[in-house]
Amino acid sequence: MIKGTVLYKKSSGTKLLYSDTKDDVMYGVVQEVSGKTHPEKSVQSIISKGYWDAVFLTYDDMEKHQSGNHDQESHGNWSNYPGELKDKIWEEYQSESKKLFDKKIKAGIPKEIISWNMGELDSSYFQEKMAEAGTKLTKKQIDEFSAEEQRIENLLDKRNKISSQWYDDHFINTNKNLGEFVGMVGEIRDIRDEYVVKQTNGVDVSVITNRALRAGKSSSRATRFDKLVATGSVKEPVVLWRSAILPQEIVNTLQKGSSFIDKGFQSTGVREKEAVFYADQRFRDTNFEGIPVIFKMKVNKGVGAVDVGYGETVLQRKTKMSITGVKRGPKIETNYDEDTKRWSYGPNFVYVDVEVDKA
Image (cartoon, rainbow, N blue to C red; front, side, top):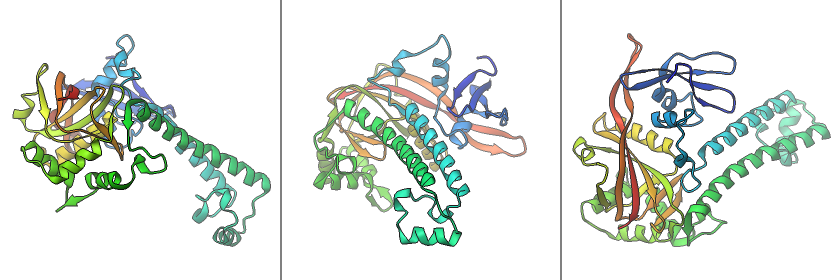
């Protein structure tokens, strides 16, 4: 790849530029619209350390999006969660919100009430703070602020509708209620809260339950979770992501053409960047033991799956996982040496493509 190649460009105009590849690690620089260029870092650190917040790109994503090497499968309606579109809307929302904030400050609206919309002008607290600041708004200002507030709110609505439509296109939810959070009510919502939120001795009950299931032991809790997952299924094939920290001996068994049955429930996400984030975090939490594995899962029609909120989709237990590909991703950064100004690295991420079917 040629030095200076644009790996990604944000809607703001900021670019991520390719710099070099050393010891299988890709390096890049972030260049702002002003021309300011940040110091060279590994692309992995640019993404995961925080100042490149628009999208997570893997080495393979960058390669396949170069001119003349385009992977159409990654853009099919059946598979691709519209994450980049949501990111761009979110960037626009943040930008427009900042502009409105600045306009309200310039108009003399106190910071204590600057987040309030113009529909709350009659509030006694709002009026009190405005009086203390000696600020009076003209009708024209009120109308302009109201219009901008509505336009910004519409951006959030548009963003939410993208997610809602995507789920409607790919999943069946027999317990759907549009007036309730993630479409769940009554007993099913209680079970969902137990799966997602409840802990025992600081450990998620979903983790405890899955450990038991994968050891061949069932429970009444697993039966309740079965009832939760039974309320949903995949309507159209969809790609979901999952990460795990696995011992080397298990990773060695992940070979193209092999298959296995997962006895536990699988918590998955719709975006690769979340799977990579959790893998990186868990790898650090385990004191850099094991191998971070990212599963890209093509989940076929009919597999039990339910959206439980927080960007998480739970798959039914006892699914058949057929491995269709194994590859290495970027290396994990483990330590930064202030003297040498260089990172040291642990193992590579291992990417495993799997096709998921009912057993």
